[in-house]
Amino acid sequence: MPKPADNQLAEADTDAEQPELRRRRSRRRDGGSSDDWTGSFETVTPDTTTAPALPVRSSSWAEAAAVADALADTPPAPPAPARRPAGAPPSYAPEPAQKTEAQASDVTAMPTSFVREQKPRPKGGFRGFLYRATGGSWNMGPSAREREEDELARRISRQLQGSFNTAVLSLKGGIGKTSTTVGVGLTLAEFRGDPPCAIDANPDSGDLVERALGEGIYQQATPRTITDLLKNIDSIDSLTGLSRYMHHSGRLHLIAGEQDPEVSDSLTAEEYLRIRKLISGYYSVALTDCGTGVTHNAMSGILQSADNLIIAAGYAVSGAKRARSTLQWLASHGYEDLARNAIVVITDKDEVSTRVDKDAIEEHLAGMCRQLIAVPHDRGVADGDLVTLDHLKPETRRAYKEIAAAIVDGYR
Image 1: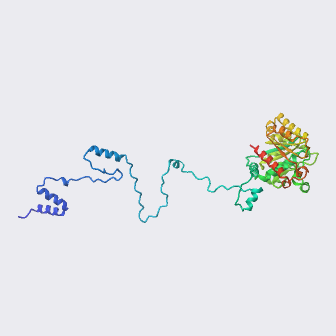
Image 2 (image 1 turned 90 degrees about the vertical axis):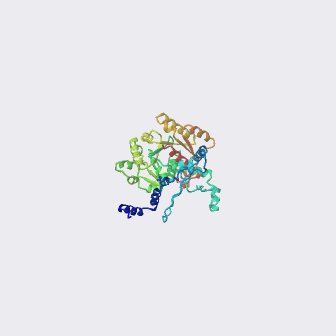
Image 3 (image 1 turned 30 degrees about the vertical axis):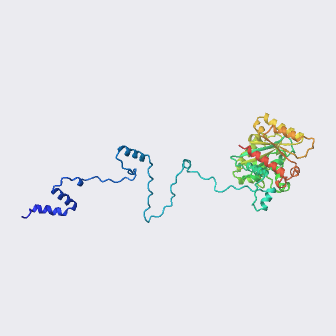
């Protein structure tokens, strides 16, 4: 008997279904009562980041729990390194390294220098000879004397913030005041990056520029003095304009004192302060040769603008006593700080006899000032003519370096 049309359509649909579905329907028609194996289950994706499955099978839940606790205490395995896609360019970034706590806390630390420090080269003596003879293979370094010289040079060349003035004075003439001004000025010019300026404020026809240039050269030069500078000071607004009234001994710039006896003592304290104010705009170090005495007209302005003092003295009994009198006068007239921080310079100009106790003079004056420096006897100073560093004894040049370093040390 032919099947109804509806049954034909149902079978056609059944034939079109999946074979697995047909088997399940056939099993139900045959009277199968269990359909457990045909149930649907959730798809489980294995978690690779969790602990691995238990390595043992146990019939006791207590044993299984103990194994699970042991696995929980085991640190997880590190993640697998990421793979670079095929054909991707290689990466040159450094792999992260394991750091200790000290390294991690100082990740910005850099070496202080990539070049090994080189031992200084000796310049003279046996060490210098050995260095030159071996082509630098044997370098014993500079001697203690050379190291002291280098330290003096470092102190002299110290960079300064502002302009400073040192006054050189005494109560007695002819004991090395002007020669000290020139020698120290030339030494400052040799070691400092900026040139110093020396001002001749001596009311008694000072010879500062003659001692720095030589009498012959100074007489041939255009006569420009401190008086000429004062007459035109209001029109000077540049270093070029100021240089027209100055003389130059190498890198030492000088302002000449007035040579006319009738007007040489006319420089007042106010006029000196005007010159000092002009100089301070162009020079960081100035030396002022004050002449003899402390009571002339310009002296109050000089002391008012001075940052420290050089007191010139000699080994003669009169020179030592007047140096002491100068310090006492300063202390009793409101200049205690200048007296306390003064530098006493004893120049052995006249080679006194052995009857004079030089050590006693030095010990007495040293207790009244910041520093005492002795300049040995030197014909290049004693003759009263041109003072040049090249013609001075090494001991004299060393003394001028010590004075220059002491001056700069006092600039604060």
